[in-house]
Length: 253
Image (cartoon, rainbow, N blue to C red; front, side, top):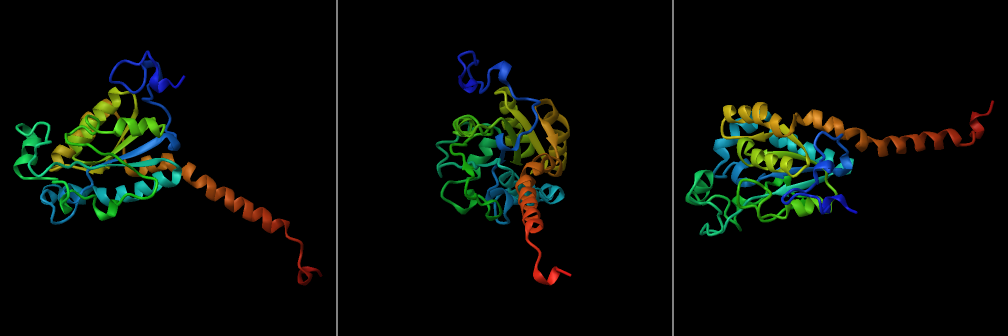
């Protein structure tokens, strides 16, 4: 029986308690890097929120590190998930447009579908084999989206989170992923917020309550051995082939 669908699994959870993956060793082939809102609105000059996040982005070098980490995940056999947010022009699909940050999204017409602002930035353009999640309207990447279904379909056990905002969508998604029984990693220097204080408070505070926070380099180090195995195997084969070649006439004394 596939334990992801065990009848003993409590409603709202991906894994039954005895099958929860938190604290498990990271297996690259059952790992997804979930990239949240790497959209022009945030990360590209000209986006309405770029000025608000650029200082933290530049300090952590989160965009460059995220691009590199995506490549490491792909080469190790893991999956890269892209999770953009977008709304209709009239904000009629905004799930709570009268409160907090979602009220700001409605008021300032942020992430409007069909516009340059809502597009994933060119640096993080989805590649062949990546997974694109649809339906994100709120802060948590799970409600109303196909994220959970696609994680299950791809056999994912470890969810590594990166993107924006550190103390909003990343933190909201982290909490839910933990509750659902995934092994959760937060890649602290692949995230950004609107203030250094807000970023630090989440990355060094609440993240540790619901996930395993680590740097991009530390996370990549857990994946690279698997990524390097095929290369090492090819090098070994090449060496064996060379040593097995018969001596050339010019080599005989």
